[in-house]
Image 1: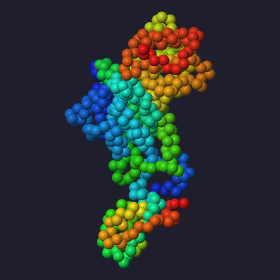
Image 2: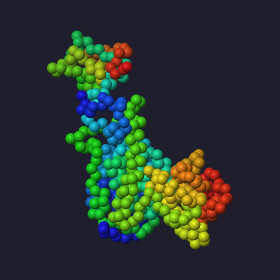
Image 3: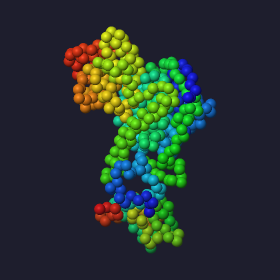
Image 4: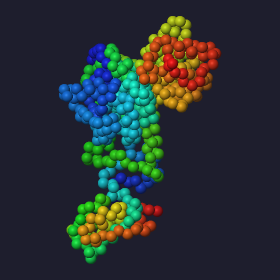
Length: 395
Length: 109
């Protein structure tokens, strides 16, 4: 078993620690609130000689991801971090990184997108990138942010996958709050992630290759996209396998979706990220008051665990999906759309309602979560479910 | 010629293509016939040409042939000449002239 020490620190500092322990060759990064302290601390590790990485200071996130792509194509283990507008500025490169099948690992500190300007937590940034071909993990706590980051390296570099992985943690709530975290010793992490053996490295001069090629009209573009779809489908088993291996090593649980009190639940909330803790807390209170409440937390959003989610929710009477992001003009938020789709094939479909909450860091008070369970209790006993997303706590 | 045999690429399944659209071979641009892009065709007048080799230096597609340190009689590699006219423009004695291309271009079906 690895040696683990318990520390009180922030999500960002343990992500930086995970970066150092995974020993990337190249880290190109541009600072943005609330991601800044990840790259700041990592830069300090480089300056102190505690990690032998090429730390590239770039002039924008567009350049950061471009440098990541170049370095990864060259054959380096590459990591970076961003947030919000920074992720938005990377948009075209996000597609290039996945299309070129480069196993880049990026931490994303979830933050709202402008306008109006807002630096606080929601999932609009990551959800906006949900179709860019990246594997996406979400952390509830600083501990999960640390664990997900380490797992991401092994998932990305798996020969069955070879896709970039985005490891998300909630801006400020998780990035900046002091939390209790167990850190593994360096050797155990190094042993877990192993040495990266790149395929098609540009620096392998004995086997010269050309990256970034053209596959235009009449060319095999369509076939390359199909290969990408097959890879991200395969990644589900790899995420589970790596999660199991990490779980065995660390003693901490991992699953694509994590369920609480679902065995006999009548109503359930589906949620992503730090709010899962609030929901669990309120669900226990509701249980004490007689409502059989359950919680499903989605930890892996891409590939989306449709079958697992459907199985977990198959016997409840009403489901509420909490979305910390909008999909303007759609029937609801991104998690709602995925969840409803996952439940479509069930023999007995239950009402599924959607709440958009916490945009721009607006407070997710316990009484708001309670109001959702109250609504679910009513729906489960016959009250018609409201259609369209409800704005939880918005005036 | 490229070592990478792509002659039956049209029948490949998605799993048969190299990872991430990589071309697993170097120096293959020679195999890519780009002469079909040409709309103007260069002609070199051997009487006027002074064999200064400036055209060979400036050609961006390395499409000027040289043999025995002289511009070859078969001057232009029309599989790769895109008809940009840089050679004609730079020729100090105006030995190269450009004229509109016909329809029989390499790689054009």
